[in-house]
Length: 376
Image 1 (cartoon, rainbow, N blue to C red):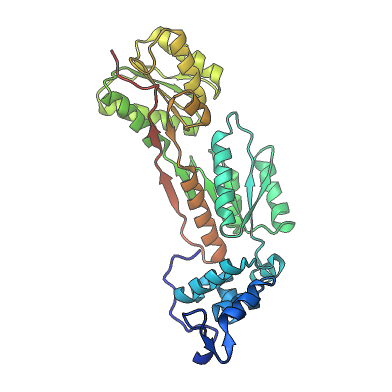
Image 2 (cartoon, rainbow, N blue to C red):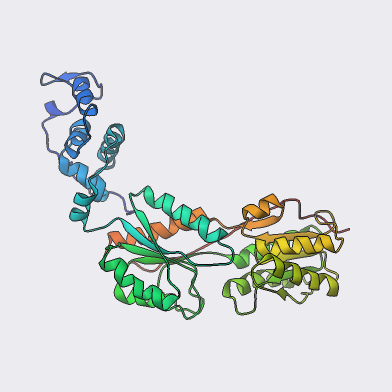
């Protein structure tokens, strides 16, 4: 993908004016009826030649539109694309791979996580958007990062993948340095938490999200707001906790001791129950919807009027949160996927040029539902 303005250059199909089709589809030139010609093309299997004929260009121009669109004038490219759509033309994948030396394949690892909601939505978005550029996703598994690095050799040698989309980044992540050193196009969904930022990444700003959620609760009148988080040392979890702490500090409010647990419903219930027994909080911000749903149950078990006097906000905007009427922060996962693919496609199309690493941080949005209200 190339965002640069197209270069002005003549259409590679140098044809006499008398041979070009007129804007009126039925005009006869050189004794040919263009309607009859187009109908004849549509009645057979679409080929590169038939697309070129219908668009009034050479086969090389059609090939350029498919493989090197920056070489073709925009008006010519649009005419070719219209012919491709009209004839339902599909390039021969094997021939295209021989020409471009690309497999049109990207690798993406499936991680085992307690709540796959986010990665599942991200995977669907990546697959959907990649297909728009005739790319397909090869999924693979690995027990750990070392085995994933071992898998790269097979993916590159056997499947000739064009690049990779990584996820679940963490401190000490060896994968990104390995791929950078090997010159493999890749981008990660997630930041390098311990730096340096030597590669391109796209991430969601969890800190900004929990700060906005906490500010919303403060605006609603809450002054004692707790936090239900993951075990200390979780980079994503600690980042989200920081946003809650930032908002309370900026408002001059005290910070109750955060309660923590693993990312599941029982841990959320236990952490919230402990907080409710030891503090007079009127609201909670939770590191995830799994924890938020447990907190929601605990608050109701404790007799709190959730949604009127007591408020709870989760994170991830999962289907379960929607069903439970839990307010939650929604990650812009389709926008994450779109940026990831834009970056890796740019690397693929400009091999050896070493484009500067891109770092994209996207803010989540707060979806307010029945679990938030005003304190009594």
